[in-house]
Amino acid sequence: QSALTQPASVSGSPGQSITISCTGTSSDVGGYNLLSWYQQYPGQAPKVIIYDVSNRPSGVSDRFSGSKSGNTASLTISGLQAEDEADYYCNSYSSSSTPHYVFGPGTKVTVL
Amino acid sequence: EVQLVESGGGLVQPGGSLRLSCAASGFSFSGYWMNWVRQAPGRGPEWMTNIKGDGSQTHYVDSVRGRFTISRDNAKNSLYLQMNSLRAEDTAVYYCARDGQARGVFDIWGQGTMVTVSS
Image (cartoon, rainbow over all chains, first blue to last red; front, side):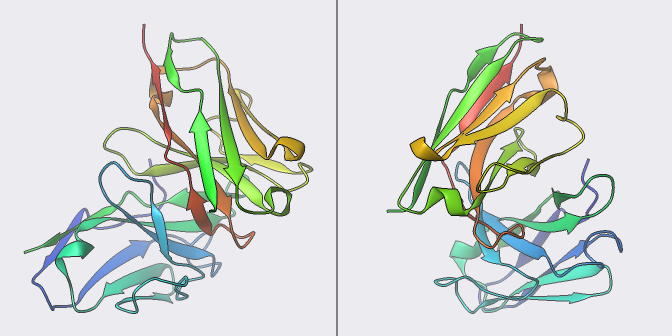
């Protein structure tokens, strides 16, 4: 059972922008900038697309952007493309209990 | 090529044990924190444990602490996960993942190895 919450699904038409939220607490999302986003296609391992809230690894499209306000982080996909249809997971450092990392339950993005 | 390759998964009975391995190549293995992350069928990933580059520090999620042990052999560029007292709820694909920034940025993942706990 994840300590972070994400919408189960988000959809949009090609070219549109969509935003996925990731809500936690002051012990995780709100307390640290150690927030990353992962994209996962069926049968594949996750791939990091955003780290430290808003940084993109080399090679990741600039259509992906991240931000954070309080205990909620957001991933925005601009200019939605068919290839963006995948599952998206947020991940945060958490100081609750013993220090560890926690993933969100995931958001299925559908391109209409 | 930077690569992680897991092995050792399979079918095990409840209460049994299994040891997973992860072979690293293409990077300076000893310089990175390494992690095990699992993903149950139809569920999101779950971070389980990590180990510092020199092996001096380890952390575990509560659900596996005391049952699972992470270790590494830097001379062999290998990461291990010893899993004891396995339960049905441990059924998942197990991934090893490199922390590229030493702060939870899992930038390199293996292909995963499936562990099924069932009688």
